[in-house]
Length: 130
Image (cartoon, rainbow, N blue to C red):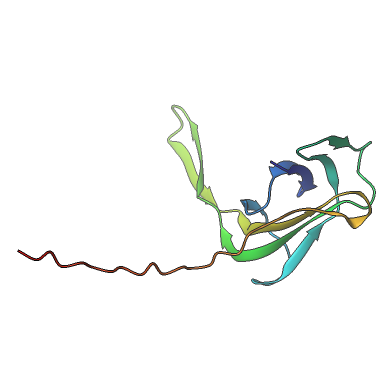
């Protein structure tokens, strides 16, 4: 199984082809293809490449599935015996990304997401004669 560790939004993510990520909001629109060039590690079935700190020429491609907001985080502050309390909420904007391709050193394609193809199975019914 091929996977990579990328750096985006100040965080590191372990990704493989066809994964869905919820990361910090990116400025692109839905349906656009984005490239992550800050690749820290690539693990292939045969070998592992470790960057110092980054791997030259390696990149990960993904497609923005949707731009949305994360779950609500409640902030509640209370000062006892002062009849003072404050309740606040925050919803961080995020992008949902689907990883499509992983490229190694020199732009060599290591892994690619398989397209979902709907195959309709032919259901044949056989009548039993009584």
